[in-house]
Length: 405
Ligand code: ADP
Ligand code: MG
Image (cartoon, helix red, strand yellow):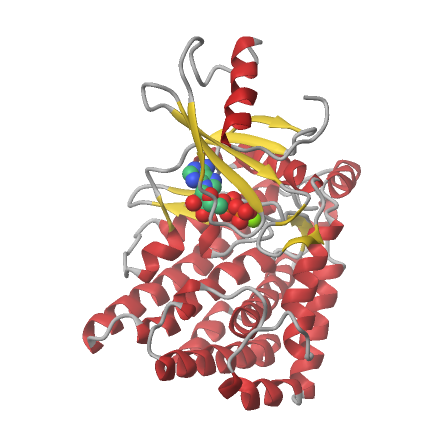
């Protein structure tokens, strides 16, 4: 096949069979009968599981030339498959233990074949069932600090870094983030989605000029701060987990952006789940216990992230100019303030924008869901407004605790 064709299960099997016959892969032995089915629950792409007779399996993910959740009226570049495969390879070289393994990539068919993580669960569903993952904070922090540091100006020679910035330029997918995070929620836009009862709260947000100024600054940082190679979509649907393992998938929104964006998105999702638990765990004590677990995960994750960044900077900075006294402290303070701000934008856009989270939308009782939505909006607003005055992570944690009680 020399031209792109959107696959069905049979075509996925034929593609893999050709790889086997031409000895371009070693994940299945020759001569096996393969089976396949499509099961992607994501917004944008096709995802097939392909298995042999012994239940060995791989995942084949193929980009469509449009956004799957909307249809052909929303065309979308196939180049996102390249970005995804290349971010996985880059991050996988730095943190193989936390990155899904790429087995094969094909530019023509805009597809990646990767290891099957079906024995793990997607974090969002697990958290909606109140499951705890004691290693999650440490793992996410290690993944973000190491992939962040080794793709940053602290470590990479300037010309090499610029070549990577160019390789990972991802304008169409960045535009989606720019619109959905920083524009749509603050204007009247048909992509927004919220119940009528929330309208006065949304209007109050849009009338808050201090908030809109702060969001404008966050958007500018997102647009113009190629600090490191981000995952770009670090929500709880992009993380597979069990008690021992944490694996990131789906970095098709990856690009060189502000370091605070990924960790801010991740902790934003912890907070969305925290607020949503009012609609899931009826028993007060059980709910408090789970919320305490989420908050400790957040505190541990940010603390370890910061500690690891500081020690990577101390031990492995190659750029002499950055070794001057005081530079790394100021840098980390800016990352903190960005993270808090981006976290706030995630809370707001998941509440009233196009893409919601199941944590909130699956709450059955209308009144409870509405009050959770009010809480996530207000929390997002307070985080964005107060981010610039949080000079230390402890100030951030105090701010959070004051808002959540
Ligand atoms: P999209 O980019 O379209 O949102 P995702 O990469 O998030 O697609 O994948 C959609 C779904 O496919 C995931 O929620 C998960 O259920 C499944 N999936 C994706 N990658 C894997 C994998 N490596 N192993 C097992 N399941 C996977
Ligand atoms: Mg995706």
